[in-house]
Length: 266
Figure 1 (tube, rainbow, N blue to C red):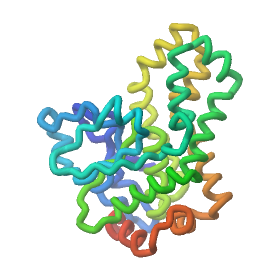
Figure 2 (cartoon, rainbow, N blue to C red):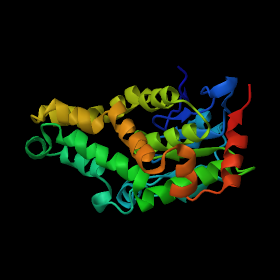
Figure 3 (cartoon, rainbow, N blue to C red):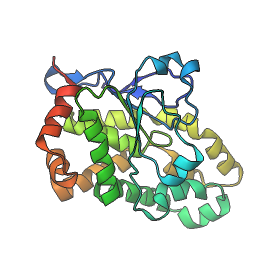
């Protein structure tokens, strides 16, 4: 099963091109237009010819205010930055952010997050990705940017390129007609990159007596999280097309343009 193509960037973590992913009827996602990654706080185009060659014209930052302030994006020259804060209306900017902070205090985390509570909390964020006002506005911005004719390559990212970015990639693929297995494969494909990115946090937590199950629930890419979002979409809106129109408020011409730009026919 095809997943996104890893771009070997020297300064951007978890950078991938959705191009080449299989779509029905022998079609594929068109390469060089839709990129996903972790945050761009260390981006240095001068030291990163692979990134520079992508020609990114729009950066869509899905992170919350505190993340953006602590690790501001270095936007490539000539590119437009679009802030699309997925969790703007979530207290503490989402459960996952609070859980990641909780890993700094292993004893407290063990008391409050054990017995499966960390994973349940993560699922709450994934429901919010689909239903919350802020998230729907953010993903509408992302899809509109990707649909912009003549807009050039778009890079969208969060912190690790795992959750908010993972759901963004899933939405794009669903609207291009990808099947459930393709969407799931893409979502899970970032696991090794994310595991490497989060290794220092995980090791400090475990060294301090933290429960490995909690670390795994907070830092892993899990199929159950994606399934939570997909089920939430299906329960409330039925299918991705209706969600895009009714849930996100996208016009038919935007969806047509998205497909015209990103689908490479067989």
